Image (tube, rainbow, N blue to C red; front, side, top):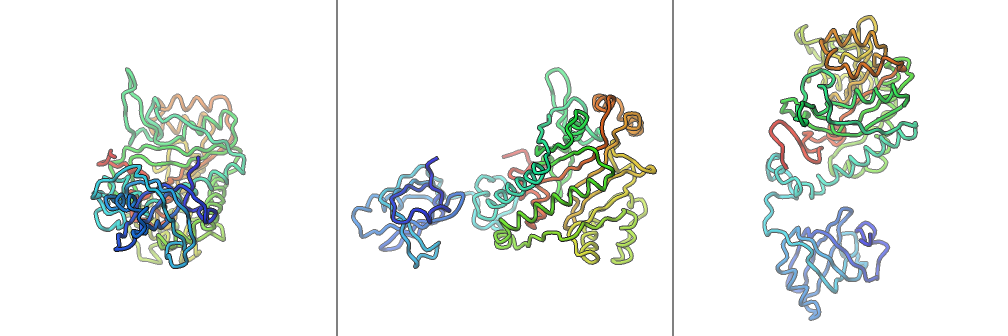
Amino acid sequence: MNKIYFNELENYFDKEIELSGFVENIRNLQWVQFLVLRDSTDKIQVTIEKSDESNALMVETVNTLPLESTVKVIGVLKKNEKVKLRGMEFIPTKIEITSKSELELPINIHDKNAQLLDQRLDYRWLDLRSEYNFNIFKIQSDMVRFMREFLYKKDFTEIHTPKLIGAASESGSEVFEVKYFDRKAYLAQSPQFYKQMAIASGYDKVFEVAPVFRAENSNTSRHTTEFTGFDLEFAYINSYEDVMDLEEELLTYTLSKLKEKHGDLIKKLYNQEIIVPENKFPRIKLADLYKELEERYNYKIDESEMNDLTTEAERLSYRYAMDKFNSEFIFVTDFPKDKRAFYHMRKNDVPEGYDLIYRGVEITTGAQREHRYDILLNQAKEKALDKDVEFYLEFFKYGCPPHGGFGLGIDRLTMLVLGLPSVKESMFIFRGPNRLNP
């Protein structure tokens, strides 16, 4: 590609070049016109002297140019310390309008508080043009890249599993049913079964970054019906502690790289500090956590609710982790079996798994998996799922090594890293019970 991106302009002073971008602002003064152009990397000021007769056609063009139109500009880049925007300006000889915007935008793209979030989401393609929103996905992209990078260094294989499946996966509930020719199919809740198939096939370490579907009629700041999952599975582990150790390493590496590349930008735009963990994440049993929350913060709930983490308990667990361990993360273990999937390995009838809480929100459920066919079959029967998952159980009939893994929501992690008020903002296109467009 021949396009010169605006963040490369330091290399083009006093040369005739061609620039393309959006028209972000126009100041039409008596003797001069100023345009601010924007591309995906930066901004540049274009200066047109009205007194120069050779600029008459450009002046006329700019007089009728709506903001957010796109233009192609030919001219020379000059240093000018008086220009507040980067100390440079572009002196054009020709301006070509490549697309013309409507005169009035339906939303204010420079003030995200000027309208309700749902109104902004109706015009997401415009909403994303703001510096605040645009950079969310530049940062998210790098975050995923760093996570991939960490796993590739450990010789993981990236796989791509089907999202159309023939049986309701995992719990058998909260799935989207679709018509598949002459029979029913379902959108996958996770790649769990096929990650484990890969392990049974002899791939020791696998991961996937892909869409995940949940038919949850939840209208909260952190739930969505489709999101991007980062899932991994690896073999020859000794316990679920190995899974926690790997996730700890993965997140520490990712946050370190994210801070290095985007720490200043994240502080500037989102007023958030990237805190890189320096110690191991604290680990606590669910029952012990509730005792701590009651003793420290007088948080009491009915005993019937203590078999899982409530939203308030998640929030307070962050406070507890910070107060006692100075950690933004905390692993919670020893959930009862009725709250865990049938394929979690159990020890003394307690699932060998965990939830990971980050900044007061659960971001991961992980576990060692049950890889022994007979035990797995019995656990599926216990939850009346044995018929639904017959195809999955076949994976374990012919030998499968001990293994474990976890799934992490990229959108929720982005929301927490940047301190966004809702997962709706950390998703490129949000999908919820009441939103199927744009």
